[in-house]
Length: 149
Image (cartoon, rainbow, N blue to C red; front, side):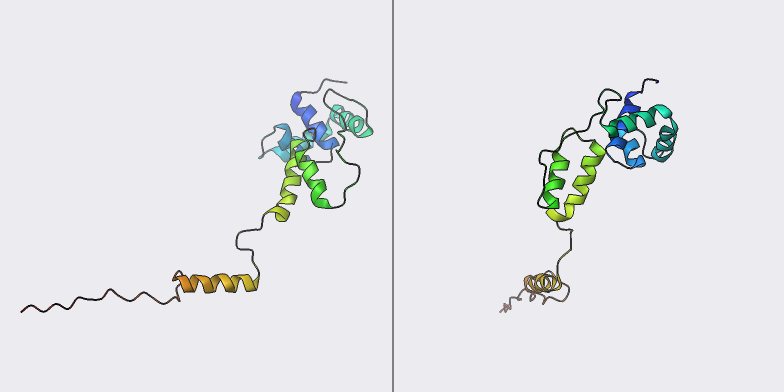
């Protein structure tokens, strides 16, 4: 079996962890524009296929290809699981980034994503503060009426 390069090894580790082809190639260091083509070419090589198969089977095919263990055996909710995946240092970066993306809606609301009642309340506050197009305008400054005698 031929020796794998660092990029090929990283690709095999990511594929063994279940990362899709394109994301595995990007995480391994291939250019984003040609990641699909690079992943297709890599998947055609018998050495890569053998490394992925060995890593999935739990055997060591190449240095760095191991099956990482999760910190817990059972999870009560998906948020805790995604947090553990995101913070796990031995998992591939692409898998950790994907977990972070999936966790975003649970941690941070989108800008402008509020309910109808909250939107009405915010709109009313803006009108009261004079920050809305329908807000009453401030009166013009009073003119001083001074008579010249």
